[in-house]
Picture (cartoon, rainbow, N blue to C red):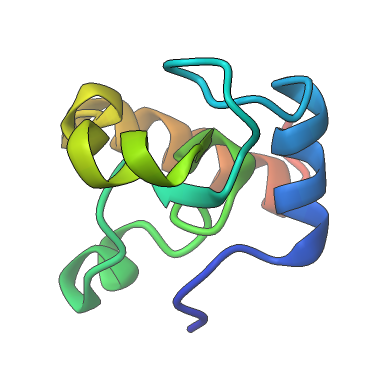
Length: 92
């Protein structure tokens, strides 16, 4: 399991955000997990954790000061994970 986002995920999220921080509109310096990338979460949400749905681009200042603003609940992560699992299985 990787600990960060792939280049393609960072590119997609950066492009979607016009290469600016989701909070202050400064240039993106890092990509932040909305749901923490812990060993526990890796077991429960293997597809969601490294997906663009769990990624937000932030400048370094906002990453350091405001990461909590972009957290999502495990209930939302469960919905995303189930959808990604169904997509992977070809059910949707």
